[in-house]
Length: 253
Ligand SMILES: [Zn+2]
Image (cartoon, rainbow, N blue to C red):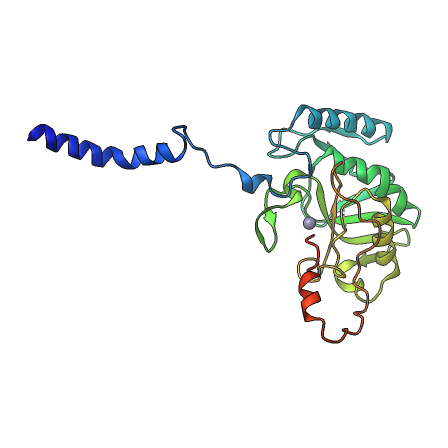
């Protein structure tokens, strides 16, 4: 009788654990880190693969060739190849923080895209200074819970203004929607380099980018967008095409 009771109690205590074990094939079940993988560049894994590390080393050699004064950044969560560029000068154009001071850790891929493409393209149009806000920050995409921002990978940078050599600041928030030619030209040129994913601006993402441009260095597997995505004046709506409209959901940034 007593033995029967003990067995019964034991079974009750153990049952939930047995059911859990059976459901997971008897193995210890660990939740997959799906949230953290979301929005990683195509072909990227975490921890970084050998290929990713080798790409990082190649990138560092490119920084030397591009005469970027870099040093290795300290190990940083989710940044494959962290670097710090103390003079914040990339291809002749200086990055100046809106507030605070460095060091600003970034992935080598962003440093290389800035030095190889942004510096020369903007230098040619007499932009001498880029006023930036956030670069590395481990966070989710604004307004998209569970999607890891590319700021978390050290690949993204937010820019609030571009200063031309005459000293004039072209401020995204104040001047972009007024059709400031420098800002529109910056958008075209950066897009044309193909080195970045879609530049987010007040034109194509007024809700979350009304006051800055979001630059995001393209990793090898990311798709290139070859044309500016600034919103053009909306065409007149075609008659009665409700069904089609539903199929044409805009691409996710
Ligand atoms: Zn951003």
